Each structure stands twice: as C-alpha cells, then as structure tokens.
Image (cartoon, rainbow, N blue to C red; front, side):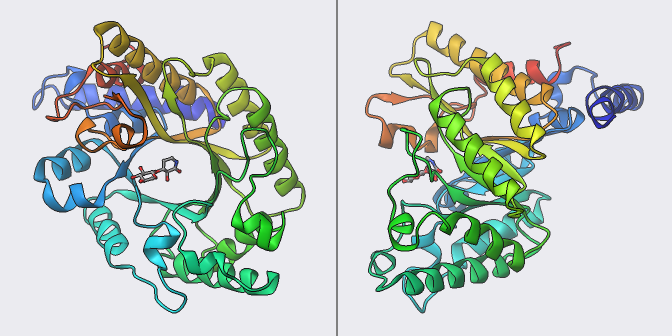
Length: 350
Ligand code: XIL
C-alpha cells in the first residue's frame, strides 16, 4: 500500500497537477525541474554533503545548493574533533552556521557523525578506564544530539564500525569500551532526541558480499535487542572499478527494509582517473542513474545524498591521487552528464 502510494499514485497525481497548472507560467519541459523537486515526486529526499569553507566564501555554491537540494550533511563540522576539541569545551559555531543556513532555506540536516574512529581528538584516546570512556562518549552524544534536538532530522550515530574483513573494526571505542559501545551510542542518541532518525552508516557494503553481510548481521542484532536504530546509510563512494551490481544493491536494500529499517544512500560519488575520458564520464553517469533508480524502486530507500555536488570542492583529489571529477557539477557549476542521468532516473520521460 505504502509502496503504491509512494511510487505511482503520488507521482501521477503530483506530476499531473504540475503539468496541468504550470504550462501558462513555465515551459512543461522537465529540465527546468530541479533534482529535489523531481526527487520529491518519487518519494526521495535529495541531499548533499556541504563544505563549510565553500558555503562561507562562494555565492554560486550557496545558490546551487539551495536550488537543487533539500537536505545537507555537514562534511566535517559535526565530527567529534570539530565539535568537542577539548574535554570541557564544545564548539558549535560552524555547525550552527550550517544548520541555520539549512533552516533558512527549508533544507533538512543529516548529522554526521557521533561515533567514528577518524577525526577524533587525542584526549579521547587517553581515557583512563572503560568507565571513563563510556562517560565521555555518553556526554558527547547527549550534548551534541541535545544541542541539535529538533533540528537534525537523522544522525549517523555510528560510522564505519566494521572492517573490510567483516569483523568489528579495531577502534579506540572497541578497545576502550568493547562491542557494546554501538548499542550504547544508539540508546544515548535516542534519549537525547527521540524524534531524530538514527542510522548505522558504512562504505563498501552497498551490494552483497562479506562487508554487507556483516553490516546486515550487526543491524539485525541491534533490532533484535530493541536498540533504537531506524536505518542504514550506504555511503556509495564508488570508482568505475569497484561499483557494486545494481541487482545486489536492490537485494540488500530489500533485506534491510524487511528488518523494518529505512535505507539512505549517504555519500555517493564516482571518482574518475584524471583527465576524465568521455567514456568514463558516460560510465559514471550510468552509475549515478542506476543507483538512483535502484533507490527509487526500493521501498526502504527514502534518501539519496551525494558527497558534495561540485568538483570544485570534492574531497576526492585530496584522498585519491590522480582521481577526481566525481560529482554532478563541474568546477564551474555546469551540470555534467551525471546530472542529466539523475534527472532521467527521476523522470524517465526526459
Ligand atoms: C571526509 C571529508 O570529505 C574530508 O574533507 C575529510 O578530510 C575526511 O573525511 N566517509 C565518511 C566521511 O563518512 O566523513 C568522509 O568525509 C568520507 C568517507
């Protein structure tokens, strides 16, 4: 029923209405529709990671962001080391600026991320006992989620807790607290904002295989223990060489949905070897189209987020030498083939 409403009735009614009402004012050509507007007709919220420096200094960045996206994920400003650099000091200024921008433009916020092994300050690593580590993590989660209560729609509560081997990743949290840190984090987050949707987020588990099995087992066990988890974020950082099979992604989204969990694509980008060839850019566009279509077709998948939107500020060239061109807009904010492919996935008539 929900599926029917989401996929067909809603789409038909809204598209019909739009086409009926708009012709006198606008051309009916769907190319004037933004990603977000078309996505909403498909029951999907379209999001992007946001670079704080870019938002501060670049007006074109702000314009495209506000036009195309209805949700943002702070790329770095809500990470532990940024928000809580010293034991007794929180610094919410930059993250607050992002949240205020979102609020002003009717954009929702995905909070990223409460518990991660990376971008944590040294003082965390020096906790003197298990109890001390539990206390500091609880304090962090209560304070941060409490600060943004009602303003952050979903939190990546735990990020990348599983290693590529499928075992729990050897992190400061696992070493100091043990495997229970994961359930604890979800409980504390839920207590601090009972309305925020709480996610486990990871990369490399989008399709089927060892890592996605391990993620599935982990979240199944959380659900079984009545731990307040609402969904799974699949990051989707892809290259043309490592992309998962769309049918495997569909199967994965379905089985996670059958656990009662929502799924979000949280960080998609498709890095290309530079300079990017025409053929690679086509293959990239195809991947964006396919993954978005797969999300649209899955009942569980309600959110599609890319890790930035312009190649001007992508993290890829910093992280992967000689790679880049991973996003939907080029460095001058011109939409790329990948952008057109996303529109096609959202409106097969285009
Ligand atoms: C990345 C940011 O994009 C970079 O600016 C930063 O230097 C490192 O982190 N998975 C995640 C994100 O969950 O937080 C990472 O973001 C990219 C991989």
